[in-house]
Image (cartoon, rainbow, N blue to C red; front, top):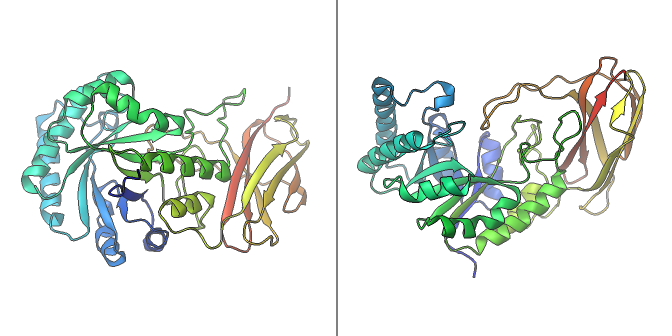
Amino acid sequence: MPNAAQWQGAAFEGDRASLAALAAAGAKVIRVYRESDAWVLDEAHKLGLKVVMGIWLGHPRHGFRLEDEAARNAQEKQVAAFVRRYRNHPALLAWGVGNEVETDMPDPMPAWHEVDRIAGLVKALDPAHPTLMVVADTSMERLRQLAGCCKQVDMLGINIYAGAVFDLPQRLRTAGIDKPVVVAELGPLGQWQAGRKPWGAPVELTSSQKAEFFARALAFLREQPQIAGVFPFLWGAKQEQTETWHGLLLNDGSQTAMTDALSAAWGKPAGAPAPQIRGIGIGRDVFAPGSEVSAGVDAVSAAGGGPLQTDWKVLAEATDLRLGGDIEAAPARIPVQVLQADAASVRFIAPAQPGAYRLFITVRDASGKAATANLPFLVSRE
């Protein structure tokens, strides 16, 4: 039967308008990542939302030295001050202690021991709110390690993507993890999992394909008694591999079929659904410099059959690629000569400079919502 007590909401990075939109969509709980997000507490309280308040801990891959006692003491002092300041806030639901601190470490235990130590400090200062540690989806070996460590952590958060979510309950049982588990980030196929073009560009799902994943995954997780909360990633816009890969919203705040899927799962089906993309295609994968490129999108309006508008743009393939969601620089938009463009198709002249590019497709209808897709292509003289 459905887990009625499960926290329902999203991982959040955005502004006040997008937070209000998240509440209107039916969310009850949000997860934020770091102390600079504390402004959310007051705004969430006004909107009737509860907050899993993130406490950012230093990552060894960013230069934090776990063996440095002075660094650990300074971190402890900052955390203590932050917890004292906000422990009585009415919107506070739980503390998120760290996020994937173990990333890129051959042995995660030193990082997890530090997380556990800080969680103990948080519990001592605020026994009224549970502590949550958040790790990347990991191997069975690491899940077994998690089962035996971190006694000061009340709940285990896991950031999990794509089909692995459907195996999670069984993997938790096999690993011997019996504490409540939060899916701290739920996402469709990540760029590190996706199929790739011969030149290495990962292939992104359309917003409609992502929405189908969220609908299935949220329905499945709702039936799992050990899953205490689920936070789709990310209510906001984020440059990570592409400008659309992980954001549930567009840069301008436009909602998508993904946000519709979340609203439906939260009991508030969208009155004006986003357009749907049924297919995309490009003439070929590799073009000579200055040659003609043709591409198309098969999209329909879900808001009563009104006319569609499509924005087509070419960006360089991203090169500032980082681990663990670190901030990435957006690639440049490439000016191209457009020969023809309408809602369903485009023809343009390929860039003169050889290299990897993407054609981004944004479809809108009268609902004000959007559908997104992109097509990697290569310009080569060979």
